[in-house]
Length: 371
Ligand code: FA5
Image 1 (tube, rainbow, N blue to C red):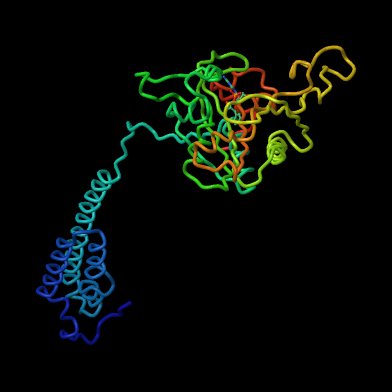
Image 2 (cartoon, rainbow, N blue to C red):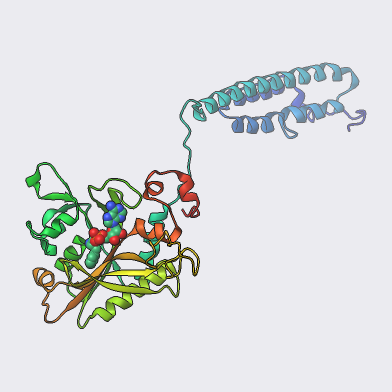
């Protein structure tokens, strides 16, 4: 704090001269007016109102004046500082208003835009079972193969030894496409993927092909017009029925658990020779055929036989191998295919096809919601 001035030196208080004060005010007002942002205004405030600004220095010098001069100099500097302070406040208000206006435009939120809701999806149990099976075969070194759902009639039937007049062609009720001579059908099974693969690849071939298939079946407890199959095909030197049994056993263990027993029965498919159906021991009665051990009441799951049909299989017909350019005297192959809905039904005791196709999320929730 300045004490009373006893040695007044006019040179030392030059900053208090009216011209100097006016120059300081002019410089301050020019800097304030030129500030185009709040940051620039902050710099102008420091320079013209801060402790080291000319007007602050002048203010400090007032104490060095003789008492008679203090009032006038004080008034002059006070007014000067007031003008600068007002100019700063006014510019501050202007720049803040500009900033707020800009933010309102730049950060505008349209509350009428429909919200993007992310709903967590979950895979259908059929997809989960199919994926589990595919993964298991991939783990054993098999490759995944695919084919189109809209398939050439020739690949769906003829190449599989189901000629136009073959009675077995009637076994699968087919959706034909308009015009009928387009030669296209909605594939009735995943077996055409066998042909596509054999035409494309050289043996050894080990593929697993899951997919959607279509038949003109009515929806009932065990049928649906759109269902899923999984097809396996192996073509290599020296493959026998024993290899087919081994592959089916592996498949059954994966699907229905360790220790599940299987059996095979002779059957007929034009594209496999010999052909067989594979059954696995009923998971409900464990092969006894009755509801409870010793009871006369038939097991409703397997109809009392103690066995459940898994799917068709067999050694790839020599004619099919030859039609695909594979020498049947050098190579042999086996194939099998089953309906995934049926497998899921049997595995989990699902009472009918309706539940699987109706799309009620509560059905899927029973199996856990794997994303
Ligand atoms: C076939 O489709 C042969 N391609 C299977 C095959 C592959 C045999 C390789 C030999 C070698 P099938 O028509 O039986 O076979 O059908 C196979 C399985 O599909 C049946 O066992 C059944 O589980 C399932 N399936 C058939 N029709 C339906 C349907 N409408 N709804 C649900 N599942 C069905």
